[in-house]
Length: 602
Image (tube, rainbow, N blue to C red; front, top):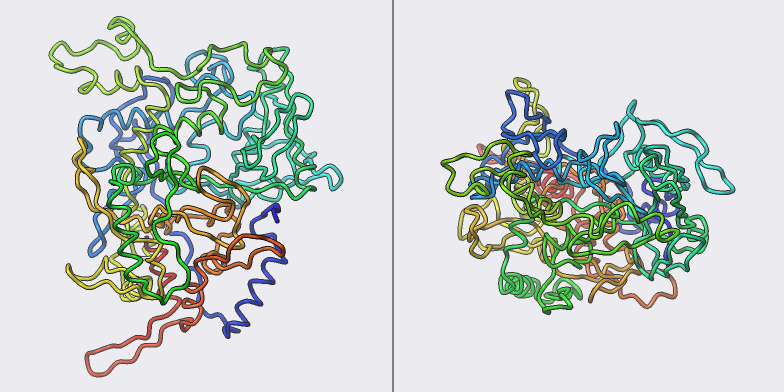
């Protein structure tokens, strides 16, 4: 039922997909995925072209980096550009830039940087971990995004021993960032073959074991469906001298068909999502059900994951398992980096207790209680005229707040992605990513997708081929102290509900989400994304669309995918548009290519 998913290397899967295309009558596929649009420019706070106003105070030495992305152009909805602060951010505007530096700061075991200087890095890495910083995983197309890729000369391939599955070649500073983290500071981590296969062109991943695993030596037991961290701190120069901890035996788990992956989720626009009232989410599900009628198969509308504490709708994570951005940040900090915090105050793994964990207090990331003198020692003299230094001098708020609070502020105020034509390319004058007005193909694709974001106000919604029924196009937030998030309309292209996804099942239950259910992935920002689906198995939109209707495994009790009718509608479209002109009027047939162009414009 469960298997290792290796992007771009699954020959059997590719063959099955090709056969599916042929059986559906599309022997010759002329449509193509336009590919990701160019990313913005990075400008550090010392760059005169940067709008970044600060040098981070909580971790001096981590620069504030302004990620220059183009804003949307008409007739697309207004957006600030992913990786940039929302307009009219309110009293946390300055703190967002400070929080960006925390999100970007690496972690080490004892908080020292590579030169051994204390206080420069986040304290508490490990004993087991997947990455050394939030930014390491969330960096495409800009800070806060999804998995980065590795291109051309920046990559150095590794090779794996065919018997042990472990890489034997030396580490390189130019490989996949996750591989770099594995060997940082002389760590002795093995690089298993699935990581070798994923790099240099694949995504960064976390591994989950659907059936769990027993403890093995000093490697902790893994509960069914839980994350099994890839690396441990043993051997690192900043680890306690007597620390012994084993990695999970991933080769055995792979042999036992007990290994699935997740890739990082983009965090753009999440403040809008967090501030959306439950009746709005439920209302969208009801509207989608009305639009669907009986024409789109067995879509289950309005099935949400719920918090076990207050029974309200949860909305963050691949299975919508987290309630809030603070919870999302706290879980990621503890699970992905091993940094304990006020929400998750104990370690997940210990090694040879207590030798691997006796270097830091628990929790390792806490709210600071500082005197004015201590604050001034960090941030410099406070303004005598400032009525509220915590607001007017954002470094104070950032320094006092825990790291995960900084992270949640960063995500909450991170702008929604821009909508630009799929072929916007680079501006020849500025050298930056351009944002062209969407063309007629994109407008046709939007109509086929099933939304009216480019149509005049009041235009009736048609479900098109049905994508919009789950990837819902429009919500309105509730009241907020942040002006931009206050009763704001936004277009995430998700219903944030759970849906049965057939052959995409990973066998992992989270909250009320079953092993074949996933939250509808928000599609905003897809135009600059490199990898698709929960495990990053493909970098091609056509494959991603068709994989929404993979058959369930033989003998499985999982339901068929809810998306099969919509996928069939997509494949019935002509591959490309045919346009005819009569006088001054040009008429075009809508096509699969129009849908792809629309998606790459998001």
